[in-house]
Length: 319
Picture 1 (cartoon, rainbow, N blue to C red):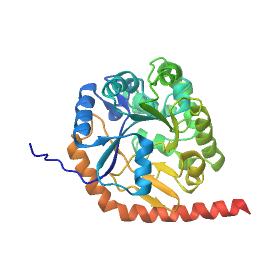
Picture 2 (cartoon, one colour):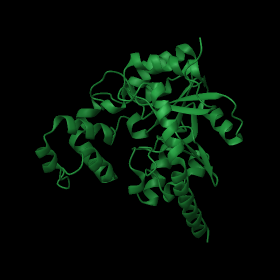
Picture 3 (tube, rainbow, N blue to C red):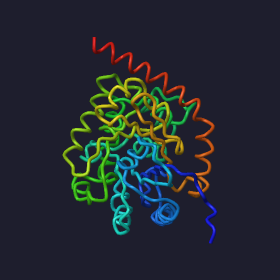
Picture 4 (spheres, rainbow, N blue to C red):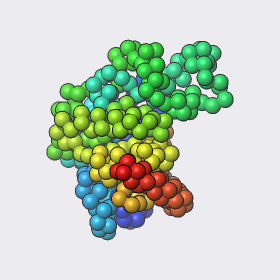
């Protein structure tokens, strides 16, 4: 039977968050097990699924004559570890998990989880009272991302931490250490998953380095960083200063299609996010390829600007 979905050669990085029906997890990052199984079969049929590290090598050497796919899981949700990974292991399909240390250690939950809980369970009057800077002219989610910081992160924990930690939203250290490292590898997603452009240089370095050192104690850890939030504005020149030491000169985003680009010494990886709220996978791929082609020139200009600024900072620090 003729394949209706003939995609161009390249490396397609697909990423998930949670795979469950757990309503405490934000709906926009949740995928049902049934849909996950269907999408994995689709990916397996249309692509050769490979590990993250070989995919990077293919991109660096530009030896791309096939359609490759890489499966990623961000944040380390319990549902992904308990529901999705056993299915992949049974089929021998590799994947990489980008983890935040404070979630694995069960010390904190993500800002995204806290914000979603507040949005769904609190009145707007209560939100304004508890967060005086919020004025209802924007979504609370946008407000929280704009204010992302250590201070806000701890404020969320003081308000909701004890309650949300009991929900076991994120996989714990034992679960991660028990993963089959022959199939599943681990990557860096910073300690607390904060909006990095809001942080100082020392705070950014600490978020990346401390998580790198912690995850280095796990089997299967690979020196790659997926930027929290993953949009084109979720990193800056300060972030790029630490990509060489803590991410093998690779910056992993959460937007785009397959227009991965090397600018200077840094390889910028685009990824395609999947969840129950996204279109069917074949339509989403088509949409992402089209948008990536249109946006690529403008994004590339922005990268060049940031890389030049980062090099200038590095030269100044060497003096």
